[in-house]
Image (cartoon, rainbow, N blue to C red; front, side, top):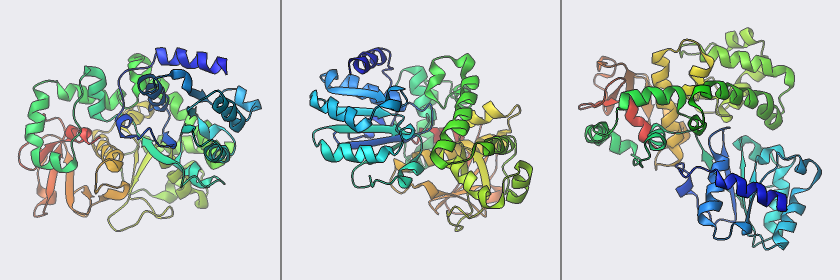
Length: 404
């Protein structure tokens, strides 16, 4: 036990003081909290910040990672029992998906020690639904996404810029943009964000960021996916090829049969693997309005989950793809934070590029983009790249990075 406390003290001493958007949205008084998200989004930092800043006596709270060799030979429930006997009040368990049948132990800890709160983190929401133990009545689940453009500005400028709702942006974009542009060189910072600003580890070493991101991608494909979804090792090279093909293509209505043929992925697996890659925050799948969101329906467009992935995978980035990808990413990530926004809020539109909440139509393009394709459509907007401020229903694309 002493070893884990010493390790915790060392980690807390080096933890960043800048908080992610999710920190203030978690009710830390809940008895069982799950924090889920992709590798590198800051789940560990979030937990350590809570101990450092909200726990009066750090020895009453303990952070552990079950990826430690210790837990290859020791039981998590028995460890929690010992910690509880030493008057422990909060146990924070990182990398929980790497512990076999982890939900059974979490449920047992919850039921056996009513005065012990539990926070756990992992990589995949899909794993929870597959667990034998029912945590639905016990655990409050939060999802941590990559940095928004707003958060990137907070991290680089040491200033707290406010979140804007979709309706605030649509109705007041000019005033919001003018205020921000009086303080920052927004277009330059937006370009930097799209290349190396989505994962918080950009602060550690910007020069090696894309190299580290490629390692993250490989770890997701080689470690996380096989562990969580029981994917055979021989399929991993096919998934890498699939991701590369998608990352180097202009978004299109995909020919799933040709993708499967190019990667040698069997017919029964093709849609399942696309959904797996979306669950692991490597892809975003978008369907047409009214098509539904079942696993076995064909997505009309397939995007990498964020723009940094595109720079890590592709040698030549298509700017049209980059614009659409950014919009889908930021709106989907914000879906849990704003009333009326849900994950399937964004659909492809018959007129324009996207329709949101079955109400707002958006056409996305470069500076000078006109309204020809959405002429006559009510509540329609042009989102233009490479502009600082907009006018009327023309809105700067970068401003949608303030949704969360």
